[in-house]
Length: 171
Image (cartoon, rainbow, N blue to C red; front, side, top):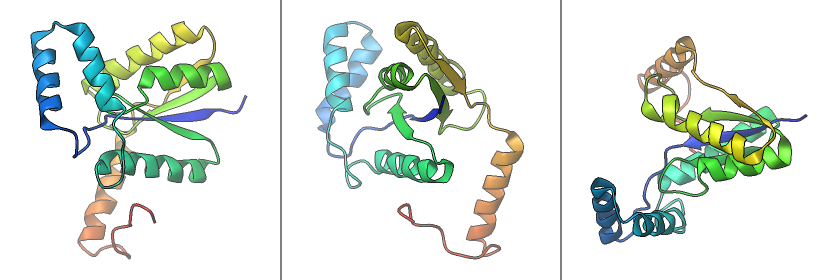
């Protein structure tokens, strides 16, 4: 069984979304009622057309997935916790039905955060229950040594201690 990878990112609102939509979303979340309106508004924001210009976070995540796919020789898909489509649950359920083995890797790398410790794990459990089949490998937590090495290389690169300029996202 050949695995597929699901790269999970947080997501962010696009720059060109009307401010009133985001303000309304925040108010509805705080109030905790009007669930149908909240669901419709979240869906409209998730489905908003994305580009490099209006959502550089989304664009960078999509480019990261392409580069990771090339590096691994595996299909890499993306999903988002908020503001972007597809949701983690939607994409994971689809992949489980088609492929059976999914490696979920978050872009958030620090232990202790609610998203990596709770939210993504709940999405995995729910998707497995809905799909009724398949296996998920949650590639978390990251080894601290690997993350420290990444940070050290970044600092050294910007201090001139490593060859090359910061890599272009399309690189």
